[in-house]
Image (cartoon, rainbow, N blue to C red):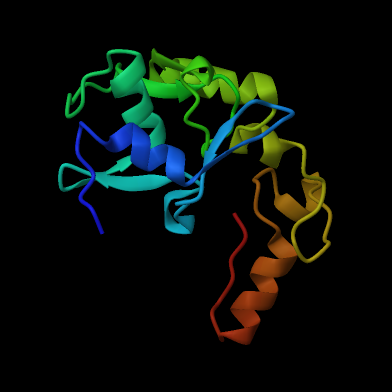
Length: 151
């Protein structure tokens, strides 16, 4: 397999990309489930997200900068997308706000849940004011012979 370099990276990305006809997202086939849905490839010997490579090639994003206020965010909320028109250079705070506004942030998703995975209600009695199902916690404690104490 040919090594991916600055000179051939776009050609290599395009080989494994499909374009979503509805969203115009450029979707790469190298999605790594351990990376929460981000497609990754090896560029110049280093594993990188394809959205980061896209920002490097099209948006003048500097690779290897260590600045928490400087990252590549998705306008489309599709982690696998590398369409430069769907990306912007921003901050983590902006990224969280985008996720909250779109309803894709885990806090927003979890706050909308009314029952635990076992089907017990998230109510004041069962959660004791916390986001933990005390019924499940007690069952797990009993199963593993652990003393459960409510707070």
